[in-house]
Image (cartoon, rainbow, N blue to C red):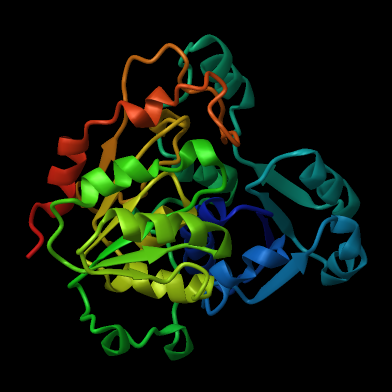
Length: 328
């Protein structure tokens, strides 16, 4: 059976499809697995032994539709489920299934604060797309496969494996990011070295955080590592402090303990850390009872209400405790 799995974006969403890919490959004997995504997210899937071919687009499926037709797929597993994937499936004219995206339930929650979201992780909803194929969730974490080329020379930074705290500085939207004052307060009692992870756009905030942390040993790697090297750092750190980010989902693949701090988005959307084998690996910190939260299923450039209470009212002490407990 030749199967095309579809998920165009983003980092965390693509990571969370990997349990489905693995189970398809392992439970459908002799199957050939292709995966289509955006070019910028290909690094998430590279070296994955359960994927036989990765097909990428820059903007439109029209770039590869002729190629896809030539592959003569038997089945399309749609884990994105939007207008673009509908066009793709109509063009290929093969059997397909999609996961329940629950857009109306998300609208109810963000607009009217009525929570009709199913009390399951989005990965479990992804698996609904492969029920017809007889594929079941193996209750294992997601996959992110690293090679020697993805390694970071830890001794060059005077670091040892499992002896430092990693901090995910950025997020796709500002309302998912921890304010620097919150980060500085949380990290105040950390005794291990602190490593800042992020892209070039996070560099300015990282420099300021280093200044705020004063005499603590902080290593700023923002803008210096590839995504896969950042993944290596989440694998080798003792804990990851993060907002609702792609690095959070990557770290969960390595069973790294995660301290997650939530702003305008909510775990009720089903996109929290995926660790079915050990839910104790992660903690969730959020400000409950805000009438304005969640304000969006993704995020904004700034708080629509201007007060950013979902981050500014976080319990610093509780986050600190989660970060430093059981860390030597």
